[in-house]
Length: 234
Image (cartoon, rainbow, N blue to C red; front, side, top):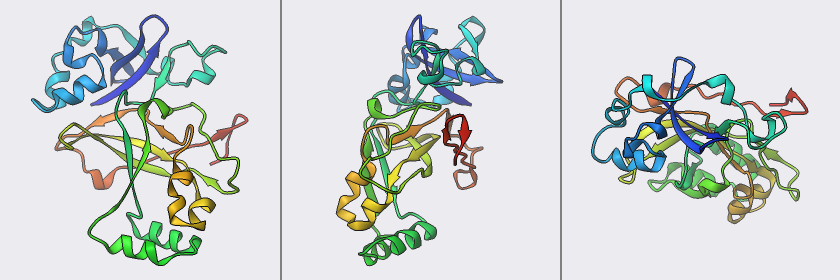
């Protein structure tokens, strides 16, 4: 079961569910808990997301082929007002955890002038957690990501995104792009906010896969592409 947020020229931002290639407008269901992502996450404190989604009568909801909205605001027929995907959050903050696997530790140690700090945090009980973005500064699929003009080494970083409710329970999974300026972070770990937090440095989506007993979070594939000038460059 998957959730999306999308923009409709007629009604604005909407919450939808993606079923067999069709997006059904949950915001039009009349169920308050399905009005938007924030309402649904709050409702998950009382019952699982799947239970709330089951209250929507899909046959009665406005339906749109996913292909019709599977684009960003920059490629909607020359108009930013055309139907398009949005980041799958509305008011939530985005936080990230760094140096979470061996390859990340080794790469950071090779790049940094203070390599030992990455070795220590990898082994430590307390993880490296850092603020990444507010919801309004995130970008969705097909939108442009930003790079710093004062960095010579800007990279995409595909990540597994955990969708949490107010009690910090994992209720869904998505895909994130933790855009980073690696040379700035390598100069000094205290430069991490400058290397990680700037305009359009966080991309999310396209969907939220609802967590349930049938999903193994350790066995999920993440795919990411960066396009420039009509060609895939990453």
